Length: 236
Image 1 (cartoon, rainbow, N blue to C red):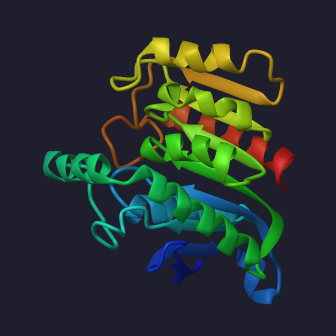
Image 2 (image 1 turned 60 degrees about the vertical axis):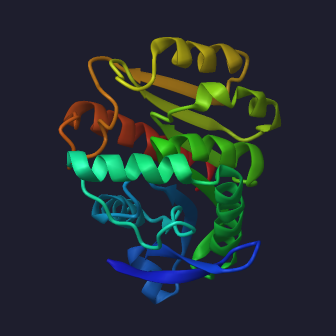
């Protein structure tokens, strides 16, 4: 893949990294629509980088910003119990207002790249799923995809600010997101025909990640296909 780390200037000073993966044709002056890919609690780790490369192979220009840089730059965790607890600790310490400013900066940087077409979507997993939802409200993205975003139901006051299309993926047997939270999201967007909410029966939190025990191939494949179809009709 044609990928590299780039520097992103924070709005309040400082600089952080983002993993940039380019479409295969980018080296020949091609470019693609943009995706700001938002990490889980495990950092921009090998899986997130692989997902960035995966979407780049579909013709998108993908930027995965380091969301934990204010605490520890370049966090790269695995999925064992010790790393899971480390990731939870980072999330609990994270300044979400500052993180949103960093995502606004990431969207701006991505739009400015010559390899990026004019439209940009956010796409995130777990913690990143909730941040992708907030990007739809506050970062000026053209579309947003949210995979099992924990805490979205606590941020639904932001929904009135969202004008772009949304796609939600929820696990049917999520051990972290109760069905009542999913129902609250459904009720909030019941009158929006540009918002799609899919629930995957039998799947648990993290079903998209092939490195986690919760990985469920069929659900992951369905969700990825739906995400690609959504992106193709909203930002391509």
